Image (tube, rainbow, N blue to C red):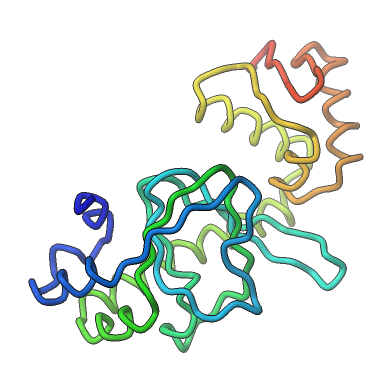
Length: 211
């Protein structure tokens, strides 16, 4: 589907030869929910376009604790998997499929050739700058926002995203998304429930009040 390539911020500034190279070399890959797409010990993957689904980018500590940095959703692209192309800025991250996902991958060897185009180079750095801003926002929340507020904001954002007050999500998933321990999430959800704000069921949270 050639329309997918229009997602690339530099697509309109490629020559016909560069567009042909991109399309002919692109690899289509599918991943099941929870499947690892990219990790620190993987070879440089290249730039990815999320044609369907949602991917999560996170850090993994030495003790195997995972910290979510940001998501890349359907209709967006990501350059953190092309660290070998961007030599002065590197993200040591894990990328996994948050749901069943279809990716278009522009191989690193091709991206290196395209990177000679100033529009490509500028777009890649701009994408990375946006992602770095996401990382800073996560750090600000962790350092300066009370956990109750972080959890409530996450629940409200999720309601807005899916357009429903019924959230089908586990407490383990919430803990992973907002970088906390499951026990803390459980304790705070109980506090919200005691105040009549939510109702907690198995694998589901119902928002009763949004005030």
